Image 1 (tube, rainbow, N blue to C red):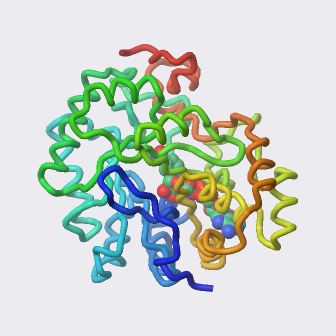
Image 2 (cartoon, protein in one colour):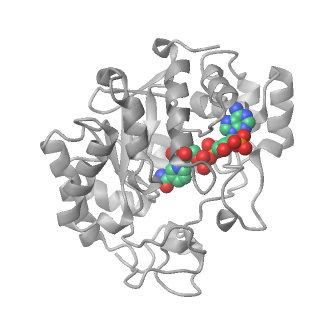
Length: 331
Ligand SMILES: NC(=O)c1ccc[n+]([C@@H]2O[C@H](COP(=O)([O-])OP(=O)(O)OC[C@H]3O[C@@H](n4cnc5c(N)ncnc54)[C@H](OP(=O)(O)O)[C@@H]3O)[C@@H](O)[C@H]2O)c1
């Protein structure tokens, strides 16, 4: 079932660079250790993946780098991300250089600011924990970080820079002040959380949306679950379409994502799963009716709420996402 990478659709970024329209996620969370994720990267290369979504905080770039070493670099798309504890201007270049060393590469195709807050938490922290100097979004500080991201492009260490977990009001300020605008925005996107306003906003400004948790992250840790969460792969519409196509509902989520125009980065350490995910983007397209049916099941159900990045006790997670179109708490 292996897929010819040349057949995988590509997204053209504002620089003219082509990014494969599906990537492999590499966040093993509490479940899959670094070695298991590295094995998945190795298997994914064999079945046709050329795009890998990495991050320093996933704690496995060094093992992934050992797998990527020796593979023709120009055939790969490698993303990494600056973690929240490295926003200080003096830390950005160093943090990127560490990811480059770990991933055994001279440059990254994309480097993203993982969250627009310098707030972080201990590994495995529960959702009520707050870092001692946690604070809201402060645009002046974010721009100091962004100037260093721009410097990474100037230094030739990074080809594109981008945002993640951001909002329209924050992007408005960034686009006003950036010398090098973001080329990609990584955001949660799956059938039950389609974010049409942000999706249209970024695409309208030449920023490619990369969709994380494209299957609704069914194996995410308990700390990222709340009672009101819904399950994409149990949705009757998704299940019905999957039955008609003879595939798992997860595959329909991936297929829908690519056809809608975002770049999903599903994770799995099971070969049959990551293989069927990439196969789904080159075969047996969804019909317009099926695409419309899935467009109709958005439940505005954000799964990765980000509670540990809040800056006050007893605060609502919604404050991270500027629900009224105004940046909450900072500015
Ligand atoms: N920028 C950010 O802040 C951010 C946040 C979250 C995630 N991410 C990125 O997004 C990636 C994906 O997110 P995610 O892993 O949380 O969620 P996901 O890709 O939506 O879900 C992954 C889970 O779906 C199941 N699955 C995958 N393919 C399947 C298939 N073909 N059939 C059946 N089940 C399948 C697997 O569970 P089983 O193993 O049980 O089958 C797998 O563990 C991460 O690895 C990371 O790179 C980025």
